[in-house]
Each structure stands twice: as structure tokens, then as C-alpha cells.
Image 1 (cartoon, helix red, strand yellow):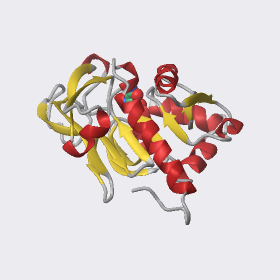
Image 2 (cartoon, protein in one colour):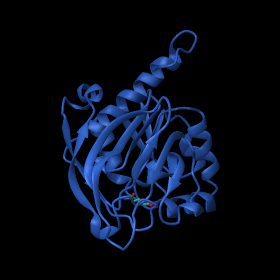
Image 3 (cartoon, protein in one colour):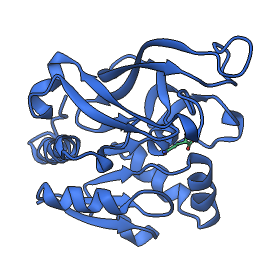
Image 4 (cartoon, protein in one colour):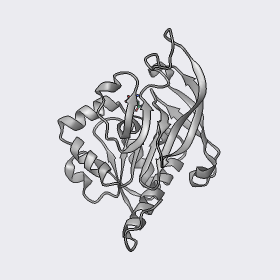
Length: 235
Ligand code: GLN
């Protein structure tokens, strides 16, 4: 059984532990440096990315999280966690945001607007990921002050999109007055090999565990790859 840590400095970590355990993984909270010992993968949960980064910096945890990310072990960022994993962030106060730069993605912190614009919507899964996500072409997504991906770099796969209104009033593309709205298809989940997964929505608040199952599979594949002769990397 793989051991998966869930960063528990701030935000929605409890539900992740429950879901990961239901998927057969051993799951534990990561609060201090020693909690990284023996974990095969890490979940950075939703919450508030600036607050999470500040707590991590103040407690000295930032360097340990960065070290884990840099080790190229599997990391899954949801919502605020997706923002923290990005190489680049746009949106409100994005300039003051520390980033782990663990995945080549450009994220908008509040793409769908503020709290009042939290919503549920069907997430469209790309065909090549459907089999690994329970065979579904669409999955329910809970979006809470959610970010979205403006672009993904080379080697990063788009996993899912959503058709929704962009309501940020600070972004460059939101022309004119408050409430400017444009509906389009936007990237809300991406992955790189067996070591990176990001989701803009909250899979730990959905009824199905398929996203947790996907991550557990990635962690197992990454462990098998590392154990293989010559340390074959999993693609
Ligand atoms: N947009 C939020 C942020 O900047 C993330 C919201 C969430 O994690 N639910 O951190």
C-alpha cells in the first residue's frame, strides 16, 4: 500500500484523507518536516493559496514542501494547491503569491469570480483519461472561488475542461465594468506523467472518488517505476 500525505496547514484536508483511505491508500496529515518521512505522494488541498503559503513560510514548512516537489514524487494540487504548484499565476494579488513551480502551467487565481460565484458544473473529461476516471465523459465538479488554467506547457496533458462564465474583474481579459462575463471552455484539470495532477475544483467534496483513485494509481505507478531496474521513469 502506498502512503500519501495530505498537507494540513490550512484548508480542506480532512475529506482528502477519508477519500484516499477509501481508495486503499494509507493517508496521513503532513504538518511538520518529519511527516514527509516515508510518504510516496503528497496532496496540497484547497483553501486559500496566499494563507497557505504564509503559514508554510512562517512554520518553516515551505522549504520542505519545495524539496518534496523537486524530488519529482507525485503531487496533486486541488484548487489553492493547484495555484501553489503553478509556474505562473495571474489574478488578484497574484504578484505577492509564492509558487512552488512544480508544473509548467499558467493559472488564474480567481477565474470564476469571488465567493458568490462558487458553483457546481459538469467537468468534461478528455477521452484519453476517461478510462482512468471510471469511464465517465463527464464528472460533477464543485468550484469554490476556483482558479482555472490559462495555458499548459509542453509535456502537460489537459485532463478536463468546463464550459463556464469567466467572472474575474481583475484579469486582463475581463474588459470594462465589474461583472463582465464571457462563456468559454476552460481547462480545469491537467497532469504530467505519473507525478503531477492538478484540479481546479474540489473532488473531495464530490460523491465519487474517481479522482482519488486516479492519484493513487499515479503514486503506485511512480513507485513501480522508481523500483524498476535502472529506475525507469513512468510516462
Ligand atoms: N482562489 C483561491 C486562492 O486564491 C482558491 C480557492 C480554493 O482553494 N477553494 O487561493
